[in-house]
Amino acid sequence: MRIVNRTRGTVIGTQVELADSLWSRFRGYLGRPEPAEGEGMLLTRCTAVHMFGMKYPLDILFLDARGIVIEFAKRLGPWRRTRRIRGARYALEVRAGTIEATGTEAGDGLVWTPPRLTAQPSVPRSKHTFDSQYDTAAFTPSRR
Image (cartoon, rainbow, N blue to C red; front, side, top):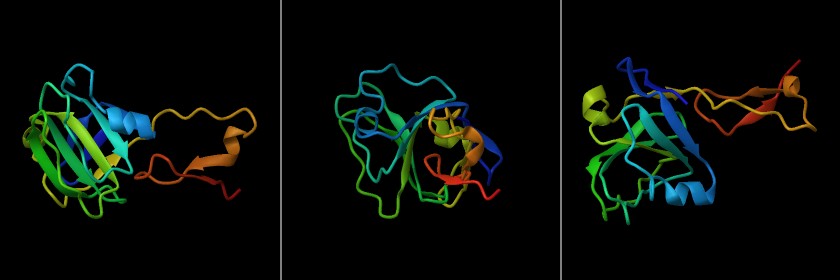
């Protein structure tokens, strides 16, 4: 996915992975190499992040359901954690220094493109459309 700060006109990430299962959200970057510039992970249904077992810091952006940054943590180090962020729906984990480099602040609006969608064999692709630029998991029947 590509994630852009629409408020500032800056690109947060060009290769952002979606973590939308219990296991992928829990694991995050644990056991993986440090993300390169432009890489990141968008965790759905996430109100807090832990860095237990990590070997490098990350920047964390907490977003509400509309993609608005409501809180962030710069250079959250190994063996640390954030507090629970009320109202957060997503957590975006990116390379340490990304928040500063992009000038991102609380109140900024982020938008992202959905990952490429694969239609299930029993559901024709033409009958479903992407519901929202903010919610990568939402699909609704088209109104044709």
